[in-house]
Length: 232
Image 1 (cartoon, rainbow, N blue to C red):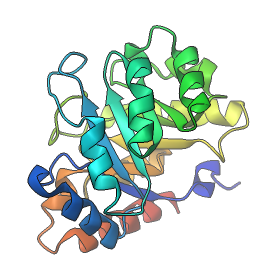
Image 2: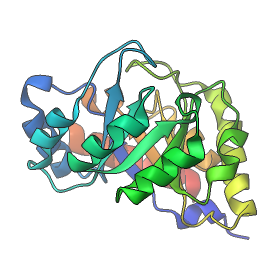
Image 3: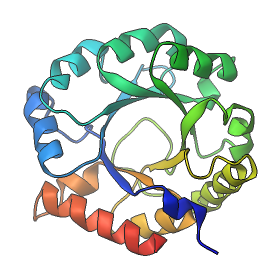
């Protein structure tokens, strides 16, 4: 019997946290040229997580420099307040944290009503069951493989069983083919196979892309090949 996860294509997605913030337009253009599938913006509010990062105007200014889709990972306490601005800035998917939403079902519905697609992120200590009752409203579940808030952290391999749990939940509700599973945190050549084999098909890479001595294009193709081999 074929693996339902294999029907979802592997997608290599950069976090722009390691990029040169003084030339983000050039950076996103370079990422598109390297073959990424979309670009993730890690939006941090200084409260849900310690850092502050990208406001909607920054993302809007970069939007015209490439054509791949943008998604915003909203590591914030007020996603409902911020959603419209990030969608208008050019983000076609908004990822909210289950831990930050008082009414997660309402928040996902609001994002969909605004014309974007909703996704939910789970921090390491949050059980997979936190998304069970919003699977009809999302097109992706993000399993964090580090604690949110900082780039360059080490991958937490004990999150792989949670990825499998999410996959099983999607199978149970008949959405295994059309809801993506994303992982974010510590993804690189040595860790991507474990995440992909567990069921993830959208793989966020930051530091690993930028530190590849052979450049961004090699890094993207190498990670894609490793993920596809793990899912074969």
